[in-house]
Length: 293
Image (tube, rainbow, N blue to C red; front, side, top):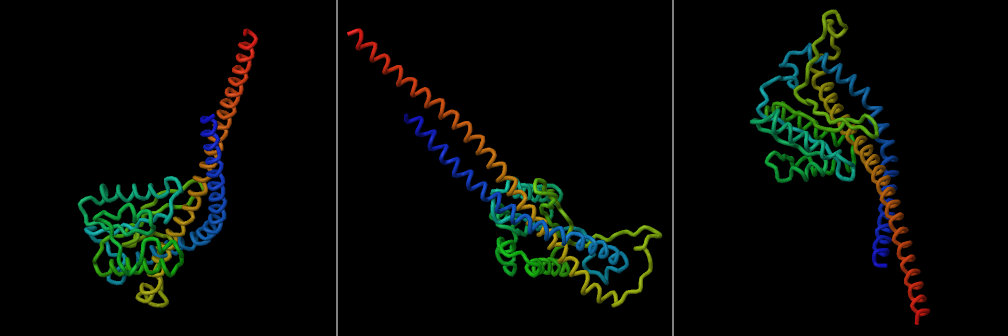
């Protein structure tokens, strides 16, 4: 009977786990709807703004656009974006692996600094020499505790200031791009310097424009705003991807727990039936022994 009790305890434990994972799945589904709406509305605007920025940069001299200064990448900042919490499958590990691969391969031998956005990647690189967290940006988990454009702007402004001052030659953002609830694509996008679009001859973007206001004012206003928008889009993508990944992970966990519960229930019933059969055999055996006496 001890074996039966052990199996019954496991069934009870798994039932409790199923309730938790099922609740987490529903919570993530609700959060995913809001996060998905946010990135769906932001993405067309951000992509069009980036296209305009690239076309504009092609018409400016480097002296007019400090953010497009293409120089040898001796110092590289990698902005790694993960979540603050786990239980979302390979969502966080994929980013950590990608950042490690960039440091070991593509930027090997360069001065690489990793800026953590999200508690999980900060924990992974806590003891790494590449970990870099400026005090003015706050803790790694603060960004996603209250994800707003203003919070993102502070990080983008810091990166722009560092690039303009010559302290960094290249900035790359590594994040999960949201495709759907089940699919997140790891992206390593160049944030700085701005990648200039080479306009084809005869295309609308290759024309000669009259700028109003002046190019200098556009550089001072539009380009920084566009860069902040690009970074905000990446964080919104990551936020939606996190909830999608967690919803999918919790759905699979609930299904697996259900399968295990059914297996254990069958095992319990078989063990219980075997125990009852043994008791019947013992009773019959005892009765036969009494008859013999």
